[in-house]
Amino acid sequence: MPDSDSFTIEPSSSGRMLCGGCVPDGVCRLGVEPRDGMWFDVTCPRHWQGGPGVAHGGWIAAAFDDVLNTAALRTEPRMVTKSLSVEYLRPVPVDRKLAVLARIERHEGREWTVSARMTLGADTLATAHAELRTRRPDHYSRHEHWLAGLPLPTNEN
Ligand SMILES: CCCCCCCCCC(=O)SCCNC(=O)CCNC(=O)[C@H](O)C(C)(C)COP(=O)(O)OP(=O)(O)OC[C@H]1O[C@@H](n2cnc3c(N)ncnc32)[C@H](O)[C@@H]1OP(=O)(O)O
Image (cartoon, rainbow, N blue to C red; front, side):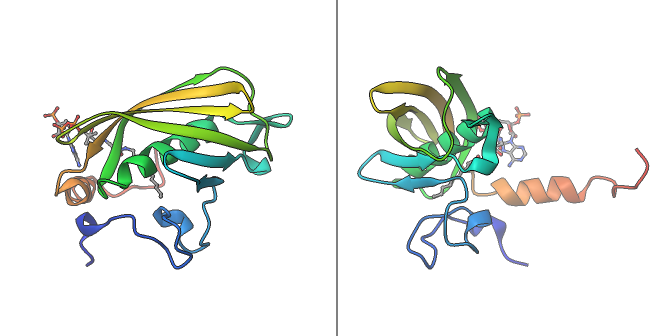
């Protein structure tokens, strides 16, 4: 059985850093593309539309989660998100290239505090703050052990 705790996000065959679900496609299905430094281009795919022509808030949170972890992954390849808060300031259009600027506010030991701002032109559409953690060495194995100890699911609730 592969050791789940050896998992790190590595560049895929396309050269892009991708999380596990996107590796087979070679592209980020959330529409996040690293640009220079802490800048990212993000485009909400139309299938993540929440209202007419505007992004679902869950996509905005997921895009921030991806950007914020990618920013920290440049220093530490084993990250998890502890908390994420998003302020939704304006509707976010789908199919429009937006800019996100990430910032590492604090990094001490396993603890990271990060933030980001999503903009279109001069307007800020949303902001995010998150606490990240460097994973403990047994993070996934501990999870698997806990899951294996649960009763098997049945069709009855
Ligand atoms: C380029 C592409 C880049 C893509 C990046 C995408 C990245 C996406 C990143 C994510 O979204 S990660 C998924 C969402 N996040 C999680 O699943 C994290 C779930 N939460 C935890 O595992 C823990 O709460 C956490 C590691 C965040 C806790 O860290 P802390 O430093 O605050 O605390 P600590 O490690 O001391 O543990 C606090 C409590 O959690 C327990 N704990 C920690 N790790 C655990 C674990 N692995 N399994 C079970 N329990 C765990 C720990 O025992 C303890 O329990 P008690 O309060 O009862 O003492």
